[in-house]
Image 1 (cartoon, helix red, strand yellow):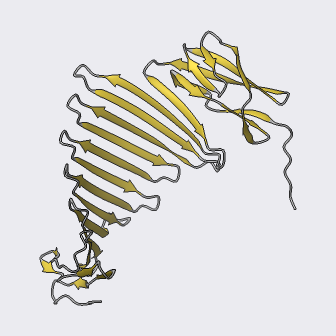
Image 2 (cartoon, rainbow, N blue to C red):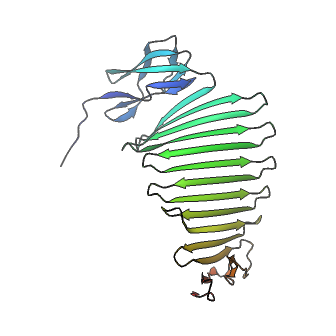
Image 3 (cartoon, rainbow, N blue to C red):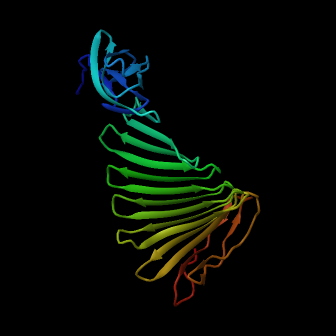
Length: 292
């Protein structure tokens, strides 16, 4: 049996550099988050600190933060950069030890638009993590555009662009690059009446499409999905169609087409809880086969 004993250790967690108008520090005693007596021993003219560890930044320079708990004292040196339109927040999960640092900067353009730049850094206890940079611009008419990029420590990444229009409709485009070299592209259109369409395509390491789906949802919540599986060697496509009808209709049918070849129909029975799924493999030279 192995036991670990802490030596009455008191430490201060938080970034050694802070930007904007505020920041946060946290104290741990024997590895557990605690609430000490906080003070600033050097640089009182540059910042103040509240009882919960919130630092209010008032100028540029270096401060020394002190924590006193259970008779023990420790300090931390922090470099401050005062930016009136920037706020930095640090959150530490007491269970997982994950530290999330969020820095937000807001500016107003001459045309009345408001732009918000946000950087979110996540560091897990095992050293893994991610950094997300996003920029949102809101125009005077209420429409907006958001561009976001996330880079993970395992080498994977994602890019998302979202446009919100004046009528409330929106479009979202996302590209995800996985650590193993595969990727995914997704396009979503959300209409002002609540209906939506989504197309997703998955690619292998060579950039060839291997699978995907097309989804349509109407204003009543009825959803129709077409799933595609591509066969680059045979040149065929497998298509599966199904639906969820929240209106309670007992049956229905629809024809899906893939490269001009019909996939026949599907049916569903919401009353009895059954969805009948007809599955066909598309072949350009032969009739559809493989019904199950």
